Amino acid sequence: MACKDAQDQRSRGLPGFLPGASAPDRSFHLSHPHPENQVWQPALPRPGSLPPGLEYLSQLDLIIIHQQVELLGMILGTETSNKYEIKNSLGQRIYFAVEESICFNRTFCSTLRACTLKVMDNSGREVITVNRPLRCNSCWCPCYLQELEIQAPPGTIVGYVAQKWDPFLPKFTIQNANKEDILKIVGPCATCGCFGDVDFEVKTINEKLTIGKISKYWSGFVNDVFTNADNFGIHVPADLDVTVKAAMIGACFLFDFMFFEHSLAGL
Image 1 (tube, one colour):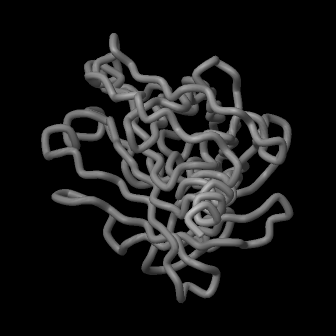
Image 2: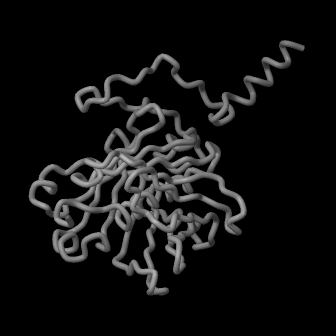
């Protein structure tokens, strides 16, 4: 009987991991969080059914996104291209994202600017491309609202993040490649987050069940006012489709632009 239980345990695999996948390296520890001691998540074997580069997401129920501080932009009060580190719950970096946009758009379109965000793994390979066109951002305008296109790998559309008009709450849908709604994201009425986290709840289409959330973490009064470094956490079921997780990473970028992007130029 004990032998049968052991076999069943091996067949099921560890919680949060794909059945049949190798066990994680328990000996890998987080070192001191300084750039010179940057911790990288070890490479994982890629299951054949996943888009290349997204195998890291298959095991995660928490994805942390940390915006890099642009010292030059802080000093000059100008908009610079955004950069983000994407980490797992242990603080190991799994991706790095860089915004590509022209100076004219950053200067005159500011947070509404059209841009492309390229998400690369630790080997420098681009695994996700997020395209953001120039669109409106107003609760008074029910048309031509914000939208992102998610490609994984680059050139293959796997989903969209689309803003839905609502006079009171920020609402978005996550869509598949055919633009069919699969999840909703509902934010709070006030997104300033002056003294606490701001949570965007991830819900089923009928909004009756909450399956996760995207949180903008409060980093303290001084950091919020004098820097543009934002920190986000994506809390989702570990077995959620990796392309949906990729779309939620794109949603984080969009929320940063729409609700939390600021610099000394805006004070």
